[in-house]
Image (cartoon, rainbow, N blue to C red; front, side, top):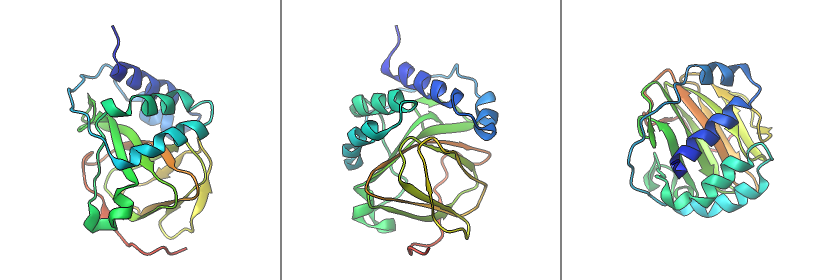
Length: 202
């Protein structure tokens, strides 16, 4: 008998296998999907109020995963890496993540982490970096992304965003929330990112 957690892992696997990108394919090819499930206590966050809208605006390819997250949000462990002292209460009220597998996820994996990031509308996630290589696949559009000294660039849902190790990157949402799937590998999978700057430069 499958559980909601098994369904979530399978939904993530199916979505990633459907992404036509060599970087995603390379990361996914090394994953052993027979992972041990952890018993994690659910944890809710204020940002989860944005999940319904994210599921509404997700494209057809991402709708099963986004809908599953929205429908079962209260059974999942949602977390935050930062506190109010980092970016302010407004950010904390509209930010969170859920790790599906990794060193802190619902399924144990010591070599790669995968989960979802949720940001509310009108939010700046200031420049930060970390040792791990990071691949994002936005499940919603209308968010602008920046890496290094490049200007912000709007990305479409399904467009792969790659951040190399220790390279600064930032995001800012528009009128819609961001729900994005992420993959971390090649560094500490639970490392707190280094905040590079907090201003909203172009």
